Length: 368
Ligand code: PLP
Ligand code: COI
Image 1 (cartoon, rainbow, N blue to C red):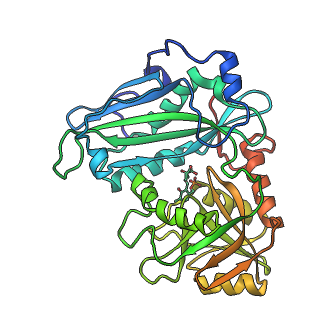
Image 2: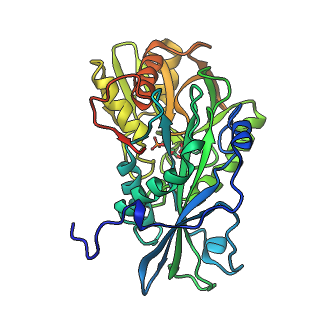
Image 3: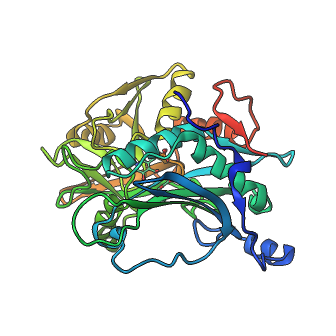
């Protein structure tokens, strides 16, 4: 790759300090009993793009509302993509990121699908460093907590015609977070969705765009009304092949020592946790097979015991066991305790993320 200008670093970001950041006592209060995604740090990073000028005005500014014209394209045509990754506090106080380049590259792929400009990987990484330089005290240190980073791109053109926005904002906000599921590693229940689909061939399933998540809200509400925690989607073309959950990839562990997971097919998100879990499982001499998995195979396998464990994974969810699996015409279960393969891969992953085990994969990046 050639650069017309030197790679931006954290120093390239102009700092507009918060006039009244949280005091240490206020921060400690907000860092106690953390949930997922409810509290935010003092600052946010930002880069502005326009069709004529490209990426410019890198800055870190006080976290707060972003005034926008009511005709801004994101508000009408949902021209938006986002990422999710975490900064982890290690026991020695240092702060580390997990595979951030992979998130930067996925943001580029998502942006390309949504006709948004691709943010250079260097800008993505530098924005995180610039924000952490100011807000590092917000990286929590309690077990299972982290600073969840949410980079996103929005089209801000003031125009109601349908065309890619000529003005775009990149923003990075950060949320000190606890576990996504409050039950710890207790198995969650999933409803297999028959009526609604998340993605279809040629659609945006592989992009991390807000619209995918908006479309998944109603199925999620209906599943919750039936008493289920999450929704598992089937392929739109045949309605018979597993895809993923609303915000997680899925794995099935067979008693013969093989592990199945849906193949990356353009409909599902290419999870970074998914790729990491595959590597971790393979290093435990388990054979991971990426292929189509039919709902019949999952249902019959869990029922017969041939599939001993099912788990979901993602940045927010880490590795979460799945217990009950049901739909309009069946209900099967793997029991109310997480299985050993699920627990072991979760332990290996989080040990690397929190610096408790050596990172032989080269996944971690020290941020501070
Ligand atoms: N699938 C969907 C739809 C997601 O939103 C996520 C979360 O980001 C994942 C899978 C898991 O991806 P990752 O492991 O990169 O967080
Ligand atoms: C993540 O895991 O980072 C996600 O974006 C999933 C979201 C549903 C919280």
